[in-house]
Length: 218
Image (cartoon, rainbow, N blue to C red):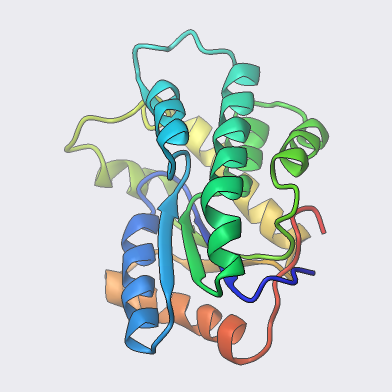
Protein backbone atom coordinates (compact mmCIF):
# COMPACT_ATOMS: atom_id res chain seq x y z
CA UNK A 1 0.00 0.00 0.00
CA UNK A 2 1.10 3.58 -0.51
CA UNK A 3 2.24 5.65 2.46
CA UNK A 4 1.92 8.93 0.58
CA UNK A 5 -0.60 11.47 1.93
CA UNK A 6 -1.82 12.24 -1.59
CA UNK A 7 -3.79 10.08 -4.02
CA UNK A 8 -3.15 9.12 -7.64
CA UNK A 9 -6.10 8.50 -9.94
CA UNK A 10 -5.35 7.46 -13.51
CA UNK A 11 -7.77 7.63 -16.43
CA UNK A 12 -7.69 5.07 -19.22
CA UNK A 13 -9.64 4.05 -22.31
CA UNK A 14 -9.50 3.70 -26.06
CA UNK A 15 -8.67 6.74 -28.17
CA UNK A 16 -11.65 9.07 -28.31
CA UNK A 17 -13.23 7.72 -25.12
CA UNK A 18 -13.23 11.14 -23.47
CA UNK A 19 -10.50 10.65 -20.85
CA UNK A 20 -9.10 14.16 -21.12
CA UNK A 21 -12.53 15.71 -20.68
CA UNK A 22 -13.15 13.59 -17.59
CA UNK A 23 -9.78 14.52 -16.11
CA UNK A 24 -10.67 18.20 -16.44
CA UNK A 25 -14.20 17.77 -15.05
CA UNK A 26 -12.91 15.70 -12.13
CA UNK A 27 -10.21 18.26 -11.36
CA UNK A 28 -12.80 21.04 -11.27
CA UNK A 29 -15.08 19.00 -8.99
CA UNK A 30 -12.21 18.24 -6.61
CA UNK A 31 -11.04 21.84 -6.47
CA UNK A 32 -14.58 22.98 -5.66
CA UNK A 33 -14.44 20.63 -2.67
CA UNK A 34 -11.16 22.07 -1.43
CA UNK A 35 -8.69 19.48 -2.70
CA UNK A 36 -5.29 20.44 -4.07
CA UNK A 37 -5.18 18.90 -7.54
CA UNK A 38 -2.43 18.26 -10.06
CA UNK A 39 -3.32 17.13 -13.58
CA UNK A 40 -0.80 15.54 -15.90
CA UNK A 41 -0.68 13.21 -18.88
CA UNK A 42 1.11 10.27 -20.45
CA UNK A 43 3.27 10.19 -22.30
CA UNK A 44 4.41 13.64 -21.21
CA UNK A 45 4.13 15.79 -18.13
CA UNK A 46 7.82 16.72 -17.94
CA UNK A 47 10.20 18.39 -20.38
CA UNK A 48 11.90 15.10 -21.22
CA UNK A 49 8.70 13.05 -21.31
CA UNK A 50 7.05 15.53 -23.68
CA UNK A 51 9.94 15.03 -26.10
CA UNK A 52 9.42 11.27 -25.91
CA UNK A 53 5.71 11.86 -26.53
CA UNK A 54 6.54 13.74 -29.70
CA UNK A 55 8.49 10.74 -31.00
CA UNK A 56 5.87 8.20 -29.98
CA UNK A 57 2.89 9.92 -31.55
CA UNK A 58 4.46 11.33 -34.72
CA UNK A 59 2.99 9.46 -37.73
CA UNK A 60 6.25 9.82 -39.65
CA UNK A 61 7.79 7.12 -37.42
CA UNK A 62 5.62 4.34 -38.78
CA UNK A 63 8.59 1.97 -38.71
CA UNK A 64 8.80 2.07 -34.89
CA UNK A 65 9.09 -1.46 -33.49
CA UNK A 66 6.60 -2.53 -30.84
CA UNK A 67 9.42 -3.19 -28.37
CA UNK A 68 10.86 0.29 -28.98
CA UNK A 69 7.42 1.78 -28.43
CA UNK A 70 6.99 -0.07 -25.14
CA UNK A 71 10.40 0.98 -23.82
CA UNK A 72 9.87 4.62 -24.76
CA UNK A 73 6.55 4.69 -22.94
CA UNK A 74 8.18 3.17 -19.85
CA UNK A 75 11.02 5.70 -20.00
CA UNK A 76 8.61 8.65 -20.22
CA UNK A 77 6.61 7.15 -17.35
CA UNK A 78 9.64 6.72 -15.11
CA UNK A 79 10.59 10.38 -15.58
CA UNK A 80 7.03 11.54 -14.85
CA UNK A 81 6.76 9.45 -11.68
CA UNK A 82 10.06 10.63 -10.23
CA UNK A 83 9.90 14.26 -11.28
CA UNK A 84 6.19 15.07 -10.88
CA UNK A 85 3.93 12.41 -9.40
CA UNK A 86 5.86 11.34 -6.30
CA UNK A 87 6.58 14.92 -5.14
CA UNK A 88 2.91 15.82 -5.63
CA UNK A 89 1.75 12.79 -3.64
CA UNK A 90 4.23 13.59 -0.89
CA UNK A 91 2.76 17.10 -0.65
CA UNK A 92 -0.76 15.68 -0.25
CA UNK A 93 -2.15 16.51 -3.69
CA UNK A 94 -4.68 14.48 -5.62
CA UNK A 95 -2.94 13.66 -8.90
CA UNK A 96 -5.08 12.98 -11.98
CA UNK A 97 -3.16 11.39 -14.86
CA UNK A 98 -4.52 11.12 -18.40
CA UNK A 99 -3.24 7.60 -19.21
CA UNK A 100 -0.72 5.63 -17.18
CA UNK A 101 0.78 2.16 -16.93
CA UNK A 102 -2.35 0.23 -17.97
CA UNK A 103 -2.04 1.87 -21.39
CA UNK A 104 1.16 -0.09 -21.95
CA UNK A 105 -0.54 -3.38 -21.14
CA UNK A 106 -3.60 -2.55 -23.26
CA UNK A 107 -1.82 -1.03 -26.28
CA UNK A 108 1.54 -2.79 -26.44
CA UNK A 109 0.34 -6.01 -24.78
CA UNK A 110 -3.15 -6.70 -26.09
CA UNK A 111 -2.89 -4.37 -29.10
CA UNK A 112 0.63 -5.17 -30.32
CA UNK A 113 0.91 -8.69 -28.93
CA UNK A 114 3.94 -8.17 -26.67
CA UNK A 115 4.22 -10.39 -23.62
CA UNK A 116 2.28 -9.09 -20.63
CA UNK A 117 4.74 -10.50 -18.11
CA UNK A 118 7.64 -8.67 -19.75
CA UNK A 119 5.66 -5.42 -19.90
CA UNK A 120 4.77 -5.76 -16.22
CA UNK A 121 8.43 -6.29 -15.30
CA UNK A 122 9.65 -3.29 -17.30
CA UNK A 123 6.94 -1.02 -15.93
CA UNK A 124 7.28 -2.19 -12.35
CA UNK A 125 10.86 -0.93 -12.62
CA UNK A 126 9.60 2.38 -14.00
CA UNK A 127 7.17 2.78 -11.07
CA UNK A 128 9.61 2.12 -8.24
CA UNK A 129 8.39 3.84 -5.07
CA UNK A 130 4.88 4.63 -6.29
CA UNK A 131 2.70 2.28 -4.22
CA UNK A 132 -1.08 2.10 -4.45
CA UNK A 133 -3.16 4.07 -6.93
CA UNK A 134 -6.63 3.97 -8.49
CA UNK A 135 -7.64 3.61 -12.14
CA UNK A 136 -10.83 4.55 -13.97
CA UNK A 137 -11.35 3.08 -17.44
CA UNK A 138 -13.73 5.07 -19.64
CA UNK A 139 -15.25 2.26 -21.70
CA UNK A 140 -16.48 3.02 -25.20
CA UNK A 141 -16.90 1.11 -28.44
CA UNK A 142 -13.75 1.82 -30.50
CA UNK A 143 -15.84 2.81 -33.51
CA UNK A 144 -17.48 5.56 -31.47
CA UNK A 145 -14.12 6.82 -30.28
CA UNK A 146 -12.71 6.84 -33.79
CA UNK A 147 -15.62 8.92 -35.02
CA UNK A 148 -14.85 11.50 -32.35
CA UNK A 149 -11.32 12.17 -33.61
CA UNK A 150 -12.05 11.67 -37.32
CA UNK A 151 -12.45 15.42 -37.87
CA UNK A 152 -8.90 16.28 -36.76
CA UNK A 153 -5.41 15.14 -37.65
CA UNK A 154 -4.81 11.83 -35.92
CA UNK A 155 -1.58 10.69 -34.27
CA UNK A 156 0.36 7.48 -34.93
CA UNK A 157 -1.63 5.37 -32.47
CA UNK A 158 -4.99 6.80 -33.51
CA UNK A 159 -4.23 5.82 -37.11
CA UNK A 160 -4.19 2.13 -36.21
CA UNK A 161 -6.95 -0.14 -37.56
CA UNK A 162 -10.28 -0.64 -35.85
CA UNK A 163 -9.26 -4.23 -35.08
CA UNK A 164 -6.26 -2.89 -33.15
CA UNK A 165 -8.47 -0.58 -31.11
CA UNK A 166 -10.89 -3.43 -30.43
CA UNK A 167 -8.02 -5.48 -29.00
CA UNK A 168 -7.07 -2.51 -26.83
CA UNK A 169 -10.59 -2.23 -25.49
CA UNK A 170 -10.71 -5.97 -24.79
CA UNK A 171 -7.40 -5.56 -22.99
CA UNK A 172 -8.71 -2.87 -20.69
CA UNK A 173 -11.71 -4.98 -19.81
CA UNK A 174 -9.49 -7.98 -19.07
CA UNK A 175 -7.18 -5.87 -16.91
CA UNK A 176 -10.14 -4.53 -14.94
CA UNK A 177 -11.49 -8.03 -14.35
CA UNK A 178 -8.08 -9.14 -13.05
CA UNK A 179 -7.58 -6.15 -10.71
CA UNK A 180 -11.00 -5.11 -9.33
CA UNK A 181 -9.43 -3.60 -6.22
CA UNK A 182 -7.67 -0.99 -8.37
CA UNK A 183 -9.50 -0.65 -11.69
CA UNK A 184 -13.07 0.54 -12.18
CA UNK A 185 -14.85 0.56 -15.55
CA UNK A 186 -17.22 3.42 -16.37
CA UNK A 187 -19.63 3.55 -19.30
CA UNK A 188 -18.28 6.28 -21.59
CA UNK A 189 -21.45 6.78 -23.64
CA UNK A 190 -23.68 9.80 -23.22
CA UNK A 191 -22.92 13.42 -22.44
CA UNK A 192 -19.70 14.42 -20.63
CA UNK A 193 -21.75 15.37 -17.56
CA UNK A 194 -23.47 11.99 -17.53
CA UNK A 195 -20.12 10.22 -17.71
CA UNK A 196 -18.73 12.51 -15.01
CA UNK A 197 -21.52 11.48 -12.64
CA UNK A 198 -20.43 7.86 -13.07
CA UNK A 199 -16.77 8.78 -12.65
CA UNK A 200 -17.44 10.83 -9.54
CA UNK A 201 -19.08 7.91 -7.76
CA UNK A 202 -15.74 6.09 -7.90
CA UNK A 203 -13.65 9.14 -7.06
CA UNK A 204 -15.80 9.77 -3.99
CA UNK A 205 -15.36 6.15 -2.90
CA UNK A 206 -11.60 6.58 -3.03
CA UNK A 207 -11.41 9.92 -1.28
CA UNK A 208 -14.35 9.74 1.13
CA UNK A 209 -15.14 6.06 1.77
CA UNK A 210 -11.67 4.77 2.52
CA UNK A 211 -10.94 2.79 -0.65
CA UNK A 212 -7.20 2.61 -1.28
CA UNK A 213 -6.68 1.23 -4.75
CA UNK A 214 -3.69 -1.10 -5.12
CA UNK A 215 -0.11 -1.14 -6.41
CA UNK A 216 0.56 -2.00 -10.04
CA UNK A 217 0.49 -5.76 -10.38
CA UNK A 218 -0.91 -6.11 -6.87
